[in-house]
Length: 287
Image (cartoon, rainbow, N blue to C red; front, side, top):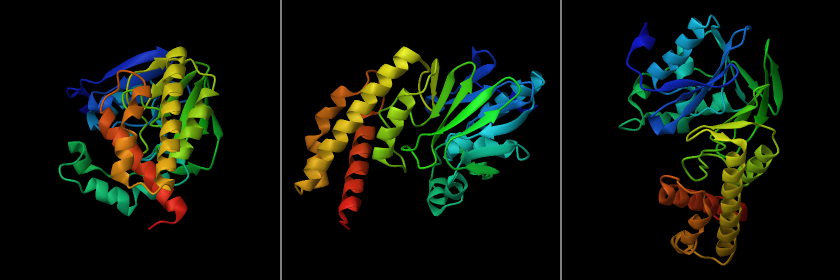
């Protein structure tokens, strides 16, 4: 079948019946939960061969995929839903609206696309949107769905019990600095604090290495401190009337507090600075 095409992504068991697909595409991580009541995907890869690999693994285990839980609506997490049009697709409120928005259409119209498979994307919105925290009871597993906005308004994390695996989506990325795409920096700070209060054994980020709890706590605490300091300094400089180029120069040294080993630090730091500055301008009513 299609899943037999060459696919360098790996699918490895993390604990119990929880599996993680690790992709070379932006260091992406996606989840597969095998349960006697049916398999559940946590996000789907944008690379169709990788989505097919996850579906095939569930079929081979005689646990066909009946549900997909989306940590957020962005297409690198939701594109593979098109391969399972009859599955229940669960997301936070607003996810479907974003998929069908003008902003999403502009993203898909980029040339070249972020990944070639986006050229044949069939947008497949959620079948169920929840508003806040929820629980999903499977035969052997409980999934706790926890809102963690910041990267995007509809971001949520998924805690799989009893294994204690937390799929954080892009609320926590472990290969880049904090990524505030179309969300809000204050909500990102609040979500970092919320995640620190969750009892998990393993943290699976949307992008980057999987971390055990001690390493994850260190990473989140460093990212949280960086974001709080950056927000405070940008607010201070904005209040003083400093233009964005001056602010960017003033806060350049704040990256020293970030976790070590990250990629694209200057680029994502610049984007975070500009995002926070725009929030400050909007809060002050400045056009």
